[in-house]
Image 1 (cartoon, rainbow, N blue to C red):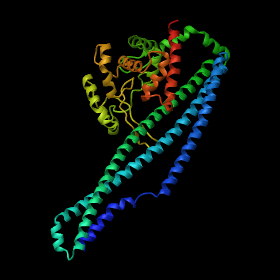
Image 2 (cartoon, rainbow, N blue to C red; image 1 turned 90 degrees about the horizontal axis):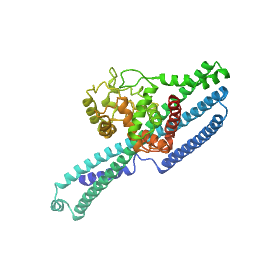
Image 3 (cartoon, rainbow, N blue to C red; image 1 turned 180 degrees about the horizontal axis):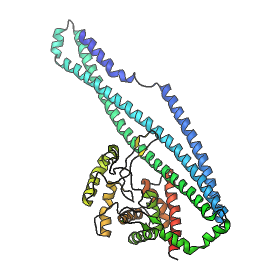
Length: 445
Protein backbone atom coordinates (compact mmCIF):
# COMPACT_ATOMS: atom_id res chain seq x y z
CA UNK A 1 0.00 0.00 0.00
CA UNK A 2 2.84 2.35 0.87
CA UNK A 3 4.48 1.76 -2.54
CA UNK A 4 1.18 2.51 -4.24
CA UNK A 5 0.80 5.84 -2.42
CA UNK A 6 4.36 6.84 -3.36
CA UNK A 7 3.77 5.95 -7.00
CA UNK A 8 0.55 7.96 -7.17
CA UNK A 9 2.29 10.90 -5.49
CA UNK A 10 5.01 11.00 -8.12
CA UNK A 11 2.58 10.66 -11.02
CA UNK A 12 0.67 13.66 -9.64
CA UNK A 13 3.98 15.46 -9.19
CA UNK A 14 4.85 14.82 -12.83
CA UNK A 15 1.72 16.47 -14.18
CA UNK A 16 1.62 19.34 -11.66
CA UNK A 17 3.41 21.84 -14.01
CA UNK A 18 0.52 21.46 -16.43
CA UNK A 19 -1.90 22.96 -13.93
CA UNK A 20 0.01 25.08 -11.42
CA UNK A 21 1.87 28.35 -11.82
CA UNK A 22 0.58 29.14 -15.28
CA UNK A 23 -1.64 32.08 -16.22
CA UNK A 24 -5.15 31.29 -17.34
CA UNK A 25 -6.23 31.73 -20.95
CA UNK A 26 -8.26 34.78 -19.92
CA UNK A 27 -5.23 36.39 -18.23
CA UNK A 28 -3.03 35.76 -21.26
CA UNK A 29 -5.72 37.12 -23.58
CA UNK A 30 -6.10 40.29 -21.49
CA UNK A 31 -2.34 40.84 -21.44
CA UNK A 32 -2.18 40.36 -25.22
CA UNK A 33 -5.02 42.82 -25.81
CA UNK A 34 -3.36 45.40 -23.55
CA UNK A 35 -0.01 44.99 -25.32
CA UNK A 36 -1.66 45.34 -28.73
CA UNK A 37 -3.52 48.47 -27.62
CA UNK A 38 -0.30 50.03 -26.34
CA UNK A 39 1.49 49.15 -29.56
CA UNK A 40 -1.30 50.69 -31.65
CA UNK A 41 -1.16 53.86 -29.56
CA UNK A 42 2.63 54.05 -29.97
CA UNK A 43 2.37 53.56 -33.74
CA UNK A 44 -0.24 56.34 -33.93
CA UNK A 45 1.97 58.72 -31.94
CA UNK A 46 4.99 57.92 -34.10
CA UNK A 47 2.98 58.39 -37.30
CA UNK A 48 1.82 61.81 -36.09
CA UNK A 49 5.37 62.86 -35.16
CA UNK A 50 6.78 61.63 -38.47
CA UNK A 51 4.12 63.61 -40.34
CA UNK A 52 5.19 66.74 -38.45
CA UNK A 53 8.85 66.01 -39.22
CA UNK A 54 8.02 65.68 -42.94
CA UNK A 55 6.21 69.01 -42.75
CA UNK A 56 9.29 70.68 -41.27
CA UNK A 57 11.52 69.09 -43.90
CA UNK A 58 9.28 70.45 -46.66
CA UNK A 59 9.48 73.89 -45.04
CA UNK A 60 13.27 73.60 -45.04
CA UNK A 61 13.31 72.89 -48.77
CA UNK A 62 11.27 76.02 -49.36
CA UNK A 63 13.43 78.17 -47.09
CA UNK A 64 16.66 76.92 -48.70
CA UNK A 65 15.27 77.85 -52.11
CA UNK A 66 14.67 81.42 -51.02
CA UNK A 67 17.15 84.30 -51.01
CA UNK A 68 20.01 83.96 -48.53
CA UNK A 69 19.08 86.45 -45.85
CA UNK A 70 19.79 86.52 -42.15
CA UNK A 71 16.09 86.12 -41.42
CA UNK A 72 15.86 83.07 -43.66
CA UNK A 73 18.99 81.54 -42.19
CA UNK A 74 17.67 81.95 -38.64
CA UNK A 75 14.32 80.54 -39.74
CA UNK A 76 16.13 77.59 -41.32
CA UNK A 77 18.07 76.85 -38.13
CA UNK A 78 14.94 77.14 -35.98
CA UNK A 79 13.02 74.83 -38.31
CA UNK A 80 15.85 72.31 -38.15
CA UNK A 81 15.80 72.54 -34.35
CA UNK A 82 12.07 71.88 -34.29
CA UNK A 83 12.52 68.87 -36.57
CA UNK A 84 15.32 67.43 -34.44
CA UNK A 85 13.29 67.96 -31.25
CA UNK A 86 10.52 65.88 -32.81
CA UNK A 87 13.03 63.24 -33.91
CA UNK A 88 14.28 63.02 -30.33
CA UNK A 89 10.68 62.64 -29.13
CA UNK A 90 10.09 59.82 -31.65
CA UNK A 91 13.31 58.10 -30.59
CA UNK A 92 12.29 58.35 -26.92
CA UNK A 93 8.97 56.66 -27.72
CA UNK A 94 10.81 53.84 -29.50
CA UNK A 95 13.26 53.49 -26.61
CA UNK A 96 10.41 53.32 -24.08
CA UNK A 97 8.77 50.54 -26.08
CA UNK A 98 11.96 48.54 -26.58
CA UNK A 99 12.81 48.85 -22.87
CA UNK A 100 9.36 47.45 -22.07
CA UNK A 101 9.93 44.63 -24.56
CA UNK A 102 13.29 43.92 -22.96
CA UNK A 103 11.68 43.71 -19.53
CA UNK A 104 9.02 41.30 -20.78
CA UNK A 105 11.60 39.14 -22.52
CA UNK A 106 13.75 38.99 -19.38
CA UNK A 107 10.68 37.99 -17.35
CA UNK A 108 9.88 35.22 -19.81
CA UNK A 109 13.46 33.96 -19.59
CA UNK A 110 13.34 34.03 -15.78
CA UNK A 111 9.99 32.19 -15.75
CA UNK A 112 11.21 29.51 -18.14
CA UNK A 113 14.47 29.12 -16.23
CA UNK A 114 12.56 28.67 -12.96
CA UNK A 115 10.23 26.19 -14.64
CA UNK A 116 13.16 24.20 -16.05
CA UNK A 117 14.76 24.03 -12.60
CA UNK A 118 11.47 22.86 -11.07
CA UNK A 119 11.10 20.16 -13.71
CA UNK A 120 14.65 18.96 -13.13
CA UNK A 121 13.84 18.57 -9.44
CA UNK A 122 10.76 16.54 -10.28
CA UNK A 123 12.74 14.38 -12.69
CA UNK A 124 15.23 13.67 -9.92
CA UNK A 125 12.41 12.60 -7.57
CA UNK A 126 10.90 10.26 -10.16
CA UNK A 127 14.31 8.76 -10.91
CA UNK A 128 14.77 8.05 -7.21
CA UNK A 129 11.31 6.42 -7.09
CA UNK A 130 12.08 4.30 -10.15
CA UNK A 131 15.42 3.36 -8.64
CA UNK A 132 13.66 2.12 -5.51
CA UNK A 133 11.17 0.18 -7.64
CA UNK A 134 13.96 -1.35 -9.70
CA UNK A 135 15.20 -3.16 -6.57
CA UNK A 136 12.15 -5.43 -6.76
CA UNK A 137 11.72 -7.80 -9.66
CA UNK A 138 8.35 -8.77 -11.14
CA UNK A 139 8.74 -12.26 -9.63
CA UNK A 140 9.30 -10.70 -6.20
CA UNK A 141 6.21 -8.50 -6.57
CA UNK A 142 4.09 -11.50 -7.58
CA UNK A 143 5.39 -13.51 -4.66
CA UNK A 144 5.08 -10.70 -2.12
CA UNK A 145 1.61 -9.57 -3.12
CA UNK A 146 -1.45 -11.15 -1.55
CA UNK A 147 -3.13 -11.42 -4.93
CA UNK A 148 -2.35 -10.97 -8.62
CA UNK A 149 -4.47 -7.82 -8.87
CA UNK A 150 -2.29 -6.00 -6.34
CA UNK A 151 0.89 -7.12 -8.14
CA UNK A 152 -0.38 -5.87 -11.48
CA UNK A 153 -1.33 -2.57 -9.83
CA UNK A 154 2.27 -2.22 -8.69
CA UNK A 155 3.54 -2.94 -12.21
CA UNK A 156 1.06 -0.43 -13.68
CA UNK A 157 2.23 2.24 -11.24
CA UNK A 158 5.84 1.60 -12.27
CA UNK A 159 4.82 2.07 -15.91
CA UNK A 160 3.11 5.35 -14.96
CA UNK A 161 6.29 6.54 -13.29
CA UNK A 162 8.27 5.76 -16.46
CA UNK A 163 5.69 7.51 -18.61
CA UNK A 164 5.70 10.53 -16.30
CA UNK A 165 9.49 10.68 -16.53
CA UNK A 166 9.34 10.61 -20.32
CA UNK A 167 6.81 13.45 -20.35
CA UNK A 168 8.93 15.54 -18.02
CA UNK A 169 12.06 14.98 -20.12
CA UNK A 170 10.18 16.00 -23.27
CA UNK A 171 8.85 19.12 -21.57
CA UNK A 172 12.29 20.03 -20.23
CA UNK A 173 13.80 19.69 -23.69
CA UNK A 174 11.10 21.96 -25.13
CA UNK A 175 11.68 24.58 -22.43
CA UNK A 176 15.42 24.61 -23.12
CA UNK A 177 14.65 25.09 -26.81
CA UNK A 178 12.36 28.00 -25.95
CA UNK A 179 15.05 29.49 -23.70
CA UNK A 180 17.54 29.46 -26.58
CA UNK A 181 15.01 31.29 -28.77
CA UNK A 182 14.27 33.82 -26.02
CA UNK A 183 18.02 34.43 -25.58
CA UNK A 184 18.35 35.28 -29.28
CA UNK A 185 15.33 37.59 -29.07
CA UNK A 186 16.87 39.29 -26.03
CA UNK A 187 20.16 39.87 -27.82
CA UNK A 188 18.36 41.32 -30.86
CA UNK A 189 16.31 43.65 -28.67
CA UNK A 190 19.42 44.75 -26.76
CA UNK A 191 21.12 45.58 -30.05
CA UNK A 192 18.08 47.59 -31.14
CA UNK A 193 17.99 49.41 -27.81
CA UNK A 194 21.72 50.20 -28.05
CA UNK A 195 21.33 51.57 -31.57
CA UNK A 196 18.33 53.71 -30.60
CA UNK A 197 20.23 55.13 -27.63
CA UNK A 198 23.14 55.94 -29.96
CA UNK A 199 20.75 57.71 -32.33
CA UNK A 200 19.37 59.74 -29.42
CA UNK A 201 22.89 60.86 -28.47
CA UNK A 202 23.56 61.94 -32.06
CA UNK A 203 20.25 63.80 -32.26
CA UNK A 204 21.01 65.72 -29.07
CA UNK A 205 24.47 66.56 -30.40
CA UNK A 206 22.94 67.88 -33.61
CA UNK A 207 20.40 69.97 -31.69
CA UNK A 208 23.19 71.46 -29.57
CA UNK A 209 25.13 72.25 -32.74
CA UNK A 210 22.15 73.96 -34.38
CA UNK A 211 21.47 76.10 -31.31
CA UNK A 212 25.17 76.98 -31.12
CA UNK A 213 25.24 77.90 -34.81
CA UNK A 214 22.24 80.18 -34.37
CA UNK A 215 23.75 81.90 -31.34
CA UNK A 216 27.10 82.36 -33.08
CA UNK A 217 25.43 83.77 -36.17
CA UNK A 218 23.43 86.30 -34.15
CA UNK A 219 26.56 87.29 -32.22
CA UNK A 220 28.66 87.74 -35.38
CA UNK A 221 26.01 89.68 -37.29
CA UNK A 222 24.57 91.53 -34.29
CA UNK A 223 21.24 90.74 -35.90
CA UNK A 224 21.91 92.98 -38.91
CA UNK A 225 21.33 91.85 -42.50
CA UNK A 226 24.25 93.88 -43.88
CA UNK A 227 26.69 92.09 -41.58
CA UNK A 228 25.31 88.72 -42.69
CA UNK A 229 25.72 89.57 -46.36
CA UNK A 230 29.31 90.68 -45.70
CA UNK A 231 30.05 87.31 -44.11
CA UNK A 232 28.56 85.49 -47.12
CA UNK A 233 30.56 87.49 -49.62
CA UNK A 234 33.89 87.21 -47.81
CA UNK A 235 35.04 83.96 -49.48
CA UNK A 236 38.71 84.45 -48.57
CA UNK A 237 37.84 84.88 -44.89
CA UNK A 238 35.69 81.75 -45.05
CA UNK A 239 38.49 79.69 -46.60
CA UNK A 240 40.96 80.89 -43.97
CA UNK A 241 38.52 80.04 -41.21
CA UNK A 242 38.07 76.53 -42.60
CA UNK A 243 41.79 75.95 -42.94
CA UNK A 244 42.45 77.05 -39.36
CA UNK A 245 39.64 75.14 -37.76
CA UNK A 246 41.42 72.85 -35.31
CA UNK A 247 40.81 69.23 -34.48
CA UNK A 248 42.53 67.30 -31.73
CA UNK A 249 42.98 63.89 -33.33
CA UNK A 250 44.15 60.88 -31.37
CA UNK A 251 47.29 59.38 -32.86
CA UNK A 252 48.51 62.78 -34.05
CA UNK A 253 51.02 64.53 -31.81
CA UNK A 254 49.57 68.02 -32.28
CA UNK A 255 46.42 69.87 -33.24
CA UNK A 256 45.76 69.70 -36.95
CA UNK A 257 43.64 71.99 -39.07
CA UNK A 258 40.58 71.01 -41.03
CA UNK A 259 42.70 71.40 -44.13
CA UNK A 260 45.09 68.76 -42.82
CA UNK A 261 42.17 66.49 -41.94
CA UNK A 262 40.96 66.93 -45.51
CA UNK A 263 44.41 65.93 -46.76
CA UNK A 264 44.24 62.67 -44.77
CA UNK A 265 40.73 61.99 -46.03
CA UNK A 266 41.79 62.78 -49.59
CA UNK A 267 44.72 60.38 -49.29
CA UNK A 268 42.38 57.64 -48.00
CA UNK A 269 39.98 58.48 -50.81
CA UNK A 270 42.75 57.97 -53.35
CA UNK A 271 43.46 54.53 -51.91
CA UNK A 272 39.83 53.37 -51.81
CA UNK A 273 37.65 55.55 -54.05
CA UNK A 274 35.45 56.76 -51.19
CA UNK A 275 34.65 60.49 -51.34
CA UNK A 276 36.74 62.50 -48.86
CA UNK A 277 33.80 64.61 -47.66
CA UNK A 278 31.74 61.49 -47.00
CA UNK A 279 34.59 59.85 -45.12
CA UNK A 280 34.99 62.96 -42.96
CA UNK A 281 31.25 62.93 -42.27
CA UNK A 282 31.22 59.30 -41.11
CA UNK A 283 34.16 59.80 -38.75
CA UNK A 284 32.58 63.00 -37.45
CA UNK A 285 29.44 61.05 -36.64
CA UNK A 286 31.37 58.20 -35.05
CA UNK A 287 33.89 60.09 -32.90
CA UNK A 288 33.86 63.78 -33.83
CA UNK A 289 36.92 63.13 -35.99
CA UNK A 290 38.77 61.38 -33.19
CA UNK A 291 37.98 63.67 -30.29
CA UNK A 292 35.58 61.21 -28.66
CA UNK A 293 37.13 57.75 -28.64
CA UNK A 294 35.58 56.28 -25.52
CA UNK A 295 35.23 56.90 -21.81
CA UNK A 296 35.84 53.39 -20.56
CA UNK A 297 39.06 51.54 -19.64
CA UNK A 298 41.01 54.74 -19.02
CA UNK A 299 43.60 55.14 -16.28
CA UNK A 300 41.75 55.65 -13.01
CA UNK A 301 38.43 54.29 -14.24
CA UNK A 302 36.49 52.04 -11.80
CA UNK A 303 36.48 48.24 -12.33
CA UNK A 304 33.01 48.29 -13.92
CA UNK A 305 34.47 50.33 -16.80
CA UNK A 306 37.31 47.89 -17.46
CA UNK A 307 37.62 46.27 -20.89
CA UNK A 308 36.96 42.94 -19.16
CA UNK A 309 33.47 44.15 -18.26
CA UNK A 310 32.41 46.38 -21.15
CA UNK A 311 33.49 44.13 -24.04
CA UNK A 312 31.69 40.96 -25.09
CA UNK A 313 34.01 38.26 -23.68
CA UNK A 314 33.48 35.56 -26.30
CA UNK A 315 33.86 38.00 -29.19
CA UNK A 316 36.31 40.76 -28.32
CA UNK A 317 38.55 39.87 -25.37
CA UNK A 318 41.15 37.88 -27.27
CA UNK A 319 41.31 40.25 -30.28
CA UNK A 320 41.76 43.21 -27.91
CA UNK A 321 44.64 41.43 -26.18
CA UNK A 322 46.25 40.78 -29.57
CA UNK A 323 45.85 44.39 -30.75
CA UNK A 324 47.23 46.04 -27.62
CA UNK A 325 50.10 43.54 -27.30
CA UNK A 326 51.23 44.09 -30.90
CA UNK A 327 51.14 47.86 -30.44
CA UNK A 328 52.86 47.77 -27.03
CA UNK A 329 49.87 49.49 -25.38
CA UNK A 330 48.69 49.00 -21.81
CA UNK A 331 45.55 46.90 -22.13
CA UNK A 332 44.15 48.28 -18.88
CA UNK A 333 44.48 51.98 -19.75
CA UNK A 334 43.70 52.10 -23.47
CA UNK A 335 40.37 53.96 -23.95
CA UNK A 336 37.42 52.20 -25.56
CA UNK A 337 33.73 53.05 -25.83
CA UNK A 338 31.35 52.32 -22.97
CA UNK A 339 28.16 50.29 -23.38
CA UNK A 340 24.86 52.12 -23.64
CA UNK A 341 22.59 52.12 -20.58
CA UNK A 342 18.82 52.31 -20.33
CA UNK A 343 16.77 54.74 -18.23
CA UNK A 344 17.35 52.56 -15.16
CA UNK A 345 21.11 52.44 -15.66
CA UNK A 346 21.11 48.83 -16.86
CA UNK A 347 23.79 47.94 -19.41
CA UNK A 348 22.45 47.44 -22.92
CA UNK A 349 24.64 45.43 -25.26
CA UNK A 350 28.40 45.83 -25.28
CA UNK A 351 30.99 48.55 -25.66
CA UNK A 352 34.64 48.26 -26.64
CA UNK A 353 34.74 50.24 -29.90
CA UNK A 354 38.21 51.65 -30.56
CA UNK A 355 39.63 54.86 -31.93
CA UNK A 356 38.26 57.42 -34.41
CA UNK A 357 36.60 54.80 -36.64
CA UNK A 358 34.97 53.03 -33.66
CA UNK A 359 35.66 49.45 -34.78
CA UNK A 360 35.16 46.74 -32.16
CA UNK A 361 38.26 44.52 -31.76
CA UNK A 362 36.87 41.48 -33.59
CA UNK A 363 35.83 43.62 -36.58
CA UNK A 364 39.19 45.42 -36.64
CA UNK A 365 41.00 42.09 -36.94
CA UNK A 366 39.07 41.40 -40.13
CA UNK A 367 40.43 44.61 -41.72
CA UNK A 368 43.90 44.60 -40.17
CA UNK A 369 45.79 42.98 -43.03
CA UNK A 370 44.07 45.19 -45.63
CA UNK A 371 45.08 48.32 -43.73
CA UNK A 372 48.67 47.10 -43.36
CA UNK A 373 48.88 46.33 -47.07
CA UNK A 374 48.23 50.04 -47.74
CA UNK A 375 50.20 51.66 -44.90
CA UNK A 376 53.09 49.20 -44.69
CA UNK A 377 53.01 49.16 -40.88
CA UNK A 378 51.14 47.48 -38.03
CA UNK A 379 47.56 48.69 -38.11
CA UNK A 380 46.63 50.91 -35.17
CA UNK A 381 42.91 51.67 -34.55
CA UNK A 382 43.86 54.80 -32.57
CA UNK A 383 45.94 56.27 -35.42
CA UNK A 384 43.81 58.74 -37.40
CA UNK A 385 45.30 57.66 -40.75
CA UNK A 386 44.69 53.98 -40.09
CA UNK A 387 41.18 54.80 -38.87
CA UNK A 388 40.42 56.69 -42.09
CA UNK A 389 41.69 53.82 -44.21
CA UNK A 390 39.79 51.20 -42.20
CA UNK A 391 36.55 53.16 -42.44
CA UNK A 392 37.06 53.81 -46.15
CA UNK A 393 37.68 50.13 -46.92
CA UNK A 394 34.50 49.10 -45.08
CA UNK A 395 32.41 51.89 -46.61
CA UNK A 396 33.62 51.05 -50.10
CA UNK A 397 32.65 47.41 -49.63
CA UNK A 398 29.16 48.57 -48.56
CA UNK A 399 28.59 50.72 -51.66
CA UNK A 400 30.22 54.10 -50.96
CA UNK A 401 32.21 54.02 -54.19
CA UNK A 402 29.41 56.14 -55.71
CA UNK A 403 27.53 59.06 -54.18
CA UNK A 404 24.22 57.26 -54.67
CA UNK A 405 25.47 54.40 -52.48
CA UNK A 406 26.69 56.57 -49.61
CA UNK A 407 23.48 56.55 -47.55
CA UNK A 408 23.30 52.76 -47.62
CA UNK A 409 27.00 52.47 -46.75
CA UNK A 410 26.57 54.84 -43.80
CA UNK A 411 23.60 52.87 -42.49
CA UNK A 412 25.50 49.59 -42.73
CA UNK A 413 28.46 51.18 -40.96
CA UNK A 414 26.16 52.04 -38.06
CA UNK A 415 23.99 48.94 -37.67
CA UNK A 416 24.93 46.44 -40.35
CA UNK A 417 21.73 47.07 -42.32
CA UNK A 418 19.35 49.73 -43.60
CA UNK A 419 16.62 49.58 -40.96
CA UNK A 420 14.76 52.89 -41.30
CA UNK A 421 14.41 53.10 -37.52
CA UNK A 422 17.95 54.42 -37.60
CA UNK A 423 17.71 56.51 -40.76
CA UNK A 424 18.68 59.61 -38.76
CA UNK A 425 22.25 58.30 -38.86
CA UNK A 426 22.40 57.94 -42.64
CA UNK A 427 20.50 61.19 -43.25
CA UNK A 428 22.80 63.12 -40.93
CA UNK A 429 25.96 61.66 -42.46
CA UNK A 430 24.81 62.64 -45.97
CA UNK A 431 23.88 66.17 -44.80
CA UNK A 432 27.24 66.54 -43.02
CA UNK A 433 29.07 65.29 -46.11
CA UNK A 434 27.33 67.97 -48.19
CA UNK A 435 28.50 70.65 -45.75
CA UNK A 436 32.04 69.26 -45.79
CA UNK A 437 32.00 69.22 -49.57
CA UNK A 438 31.19 72.95 -49.54
CA UNK A 439 34.11 73.52 -47.16
CA UNK A 440 36.46 71.44 -49.30
CA UNK A 441 35.34 73.28 -52.44
CA UNK A 442 36.00 76.59 -50.65
CA UNK A 443 39.50 75.42 -49.74
CA UNK A 444 40.23 74.59 -53.39
CA UNK A 445 39.16 77.97 -54.74
